[in-house]
Length: 74
Image (tube, rainbow, N blue to C red; front, side, top):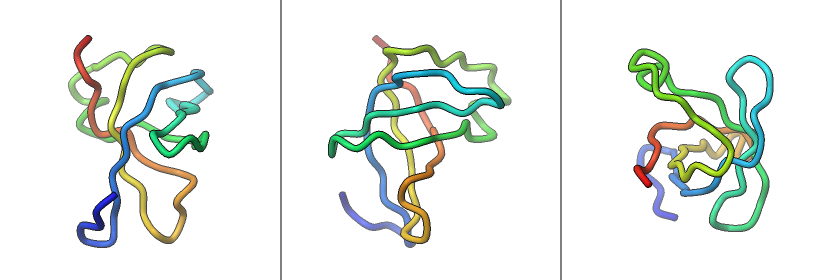
Protein backbone atom coordinates (compact mmCIF):
# COMPACT_ATOMS: atom_id res chain seq x y z
CA UNK A 1 0.00 0.00 0.00
CA UNK A 2 2.31 2.78 -1.24
CA UNK A 3 1.60 6.36 -0.25
CA UNK A 4 1.33 8.84 -3.15
CA UNK A 5 0.57 12.52 -2.36
CA UNK A 6 -1.00 11.59 0.98
CA UNK A 7 -3.33 9.02 -0.59
CA UNK A 8 -3.14 5.26 -0.71
CA UNK A 9 -4.86 2.91 -3.13
CA UNK A 10 -6.47 -0.45 -2.44
CA UNK A 11 -8.30 -3.00 -4.54
CA UNK A 12 -11.48 -4.61 -3.34
CA UNK A 13 -14.88 -6.09 -4.07
CA UNK A 14 -18.23 -4.31 -3.88
CA UNK A 15 -20.50 -5.96 -1.31
CA UNK A 16 -23.57 -3.74 -1.30
CA UNK A 17 -25.09 -0.67 -2.97
CA UNK A 18 -26.12 2.09 -0.57
CA UNK A 19 -28.17 5.25 -1.30
CA UNK A 20 -26.57 8.29 -3.01
CA UNK A 21 -23.92 6.36 -5.00
CA UNK A 22 -22.27 4.93 -1.89
CA UNK A 23 -20.99 1.38 -1.70
CA UNK A 24 -19.78 -1.05 0.96
CA UNK A 25 -16.45 -2.47 -0.22
CA UNK A 26 -14.28 -5.25 1.20
CA UNK A 27 -10.72 -4.13 0.46
CA UNK A 28 -7.69 -6.37 0.06
CA UNK A 29 -6.66 -5.83 3.68
CA UNK A 30 -9.94 -7.44 4.82
CA UNK A 31 -11.70 -4.34 6.17
CA UNK A 32 -15.16 -3.26 5.02
CA UNK A 33 -15.12 0.41 4.04
CA UNK A 34 -17.61 2.88 2.57
CA UNK A 35 -16.79 4.34 -0.84
CA UNK A 36 -18.43 6.78 -3.22
CA UNK A 37 -18.05 7.21 -6.97
CA UNK A 38 -15.42 9.53 -8.39
CA UNK A 39 -16.62 12.24 -10.78
CA UNK A 40 -14.99 10.62 -13.83
CA UNK A 41 -16.86 7.36 -13.17
CA UNK A 42 -20.18 9.23 -12.90
CA UNK A 43 -19.43 11.28 -16.01
CA UNK A 44 -18.75 8.14 -18.09
CA UNK A 45 -21.90 6.38 -16.76
CA UNK A 46 -19.96 3.37 -15.46
CA UNK A 47 -22.29 1.03 -13.56
CA UNK A 48 -21.05 -0.62 -10.39
CA UNK A 49 -22.79 -3.75 -9.08
CA UNK A 50 -22.19 -6.05 -6.10
CA UNK A 51 -19.42 -8.50 -6.93
CA UNK A 52 -17.45 -6.06 -9.12
CA UNK A 53 -13.71 -5.68 -8.51
CA UNK A 54 -12.72 -2.02 -8.04
CA UNK A 55 -9.78 0.21 -7.13
CA UNK A 56 -10.35 2.91 -4.52
CA UNK A 57 -8.26 5.73 -3.10
CA UNK A 58 -8.23 6.68 0.58
CA UNK A 59 -6.65 9.55 2.50
CA UNK A 60 -4.80 9.32 5.78
CA UNK A 61 -7.30 11.70 7.41
CA UNK A 62 -10.25 9.31 6.95
CA UNK A 63 -9.06 5.84 5.88
CA UNK A 64 -12.53 4.29 6.29
CA UNK A 65 -14.14 6.39 3.52
CA UNK A 66 -12.77 6.37 -0.01
CA UNK A 67 -13.42 7.11 -3.65
CA UNK A 68 -13.93 4.47 -6.35
CA UNK A 69 -11.66 5.47 -9.20
CA UNK A 70 -11.86 2.43 -11.51
CA UNK A 71 -13.65 -0.84 -12.10
CA UNK A 72 -11.81 -3.89 -13.38
CA UNK A 73 -13.22 -5.59 -16.46
CA UNK A 74 -14.25 -9.19 -15.77
